[in-house]
Image (cartoon, rainbow, N blue to C red):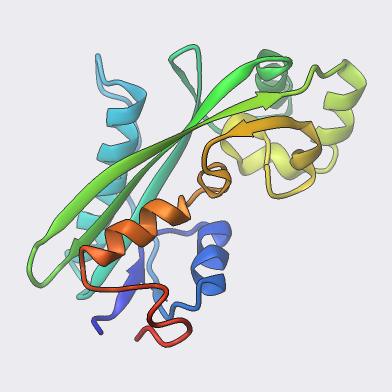
Length: 197
């Protein structure tokens, strides 16, 4: 089997792939993540995941897995908080509302140049938060590097009232979509558990 490369610095994505029994190399990409004029959130997520894969492929050979996860509220992308005050404002904006988590996911074979990109969208409802809830959560320091200022796989799980769709997508890597895309590269996660190399 071809070498697998995760083009990401995310510890959450690394853990998901490890839990699936895959052996892989981690190579974080360096790309600009600025939204282009008139670019939809879905198109932005797909473009960023594609750019990450192509960037890593310039210097490394293998099947590259990349993803870009964004939080979207009323069609506006909500990024990572700039500081504590920004995290407060983000959580207030999400409080009591439904938002979307969109992940663009790309697989790219640097040898054959075969590239497949897709996206997954999940609806997430954050419970109604009061100022005390927000203050306590921010003091965990968990929101500082998370899009949308919360981590559904951490203490932020208590803020999530409901999820409609792929929970792993909210964490940062939609497992079912990854499984389907890997099959396009003749890699079956069920057939080779713990034995991908």
